[in-house]
Image (tube, rainbow, N blue to C red):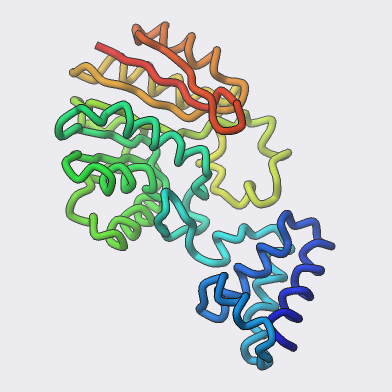
Length: 279
């Protein structure tokens, strides 16, 4: 079988199993097994593949058909134009979160040497991207999960930031970072009753990274209270939220004396982000 034959065969199988974008998935998985860039495949369509080259792909295709996310199978995910280690220890980075980072970078562009705190860092992509885009920033990141922090540390080392980021194992705010200029948080916001209805791919993310309590706002509510009470300097907070949570999040921020509260839409015209100031 040629490269093209293998792609067509894998595409057909994935399509029958209900995988979205089956051709793209097949190409990514074949390129991964061959150690190539995906676009290289287009220059090798007529090249015959040996059985030893095809064998690893069979297992990957079976796993993808069973709902294992493509990023977990490949071991990496793209974010803000960079590759990060990605596995079941933390949430797979989403395009909306790239937009959250873009918003924050714009908000702090005139702030010299900002102190930035990423709460619930997961794989670390938010904190690391801010550190890479703003070399003058002091960046802290927290997570309650030691597994997620280990993954974030691997990504920090991968991007040469092991000595720049300060990681804290903490339930939301760390005890020793009380004067941030900006708090960023993409916390779990899925209501408990909706988790069972999520796609099989999303359900491969750790439950700790999905479960936002009965209304999805448990952790956001706690962060607003903790930050509003304990942070000792004026700061900006930037939150990623669920598709129908903007009004509720604005209300709970107002209840904790935040000001200049506003919500912003993502590229799908959903109110996905809430920003506010305190102090």
